[in-house]
Length: 116
Image 1: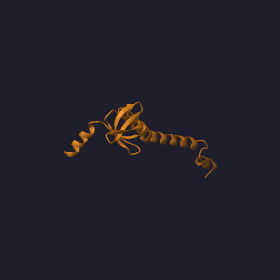
Image 2 (image 1 turned 180 degrees about the vertical axis):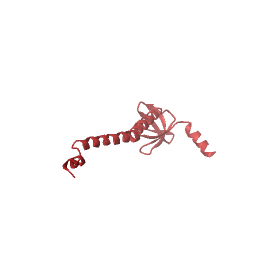
Image 3 (image 1 turned 30 degrees about the horizontal axis):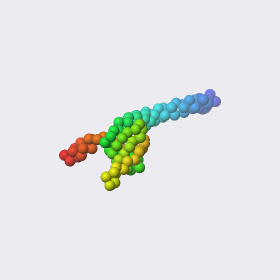
Image 4 (image 1 turned 90 degrees about the vertical axis):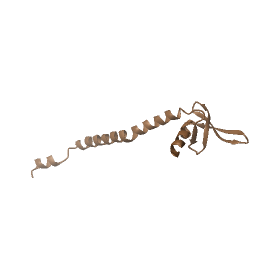
């Protein structure tokens, strides 16, 4: 082999850097469209659904409290969790800490569907 043939086989000094960045960019785009974007969309839908919380809806908080919405004040819900000697026990819960929300009337429809 001549020296001209050896120089052709050697990698160009700047060529590997560009292909590396191109590959990393492609991986980031794939990751963005398969993971990040769907997760952001799901989070927006969840926040919009939680904003529809109204009196009478059943909720479960992130701490595990089960209760019924007694009132809504912006991003804070007043939740009835029990009755003691005829008086309602209510707590205030941040909307961000609500884990599950079941709309009033939807629970009855779900129970009827399950019994069929």
